[in-house]
Length: 237
Image 1 (cartoon, rainbow, N blue to C red):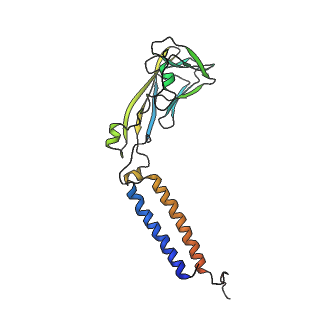
Image 2: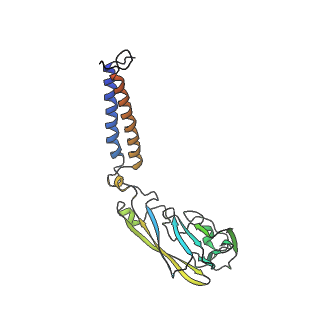
């Protein structure tokens, strides 16, 4: 196969043409705007009221799970979705009420678990230790959007930030009530790509392809500078 200057020029033109085509195709492929895929949500803690010294709460995974750490020396009980005792934090570890519907519904990101007949908000609590330690995280469905479809406000304006709702999780410390409160917000992921109507995955593919194409062009250029004998040229004194 020929490797003369004409052949190199032909390959150079082909590589440049491929880069141009990829750059044009990428924006047009995502021109229909962003689609909801369960991302872009952030759930944040507003506070604990009244403050319980030694009780720490935070959200992990953006909006996925609520984590409570109890270093207060008190027995802390988190209430379930029907107002029933759900989780109990004490010195010996963390316990779950097996008669609470929340014990089963809070195992996954979307509440789809089948409940045993005994799991009702009015049932007598029956505690089972689920771990040793002071901290536990669970999928609390009060702090995130539980549907796979976007909220109406996000569907109408997917490229804007929104306050979706405010939430509260009731609990007790040695029998005294307190409330963990917060809010769920939405911010469009990769806002620059969303504004331009471009898929972020497609942008990444174009960038990688462009880097490889440029590397190929540099290799072709280096070969073109070598003499036909295959040895690098030397400068004469």
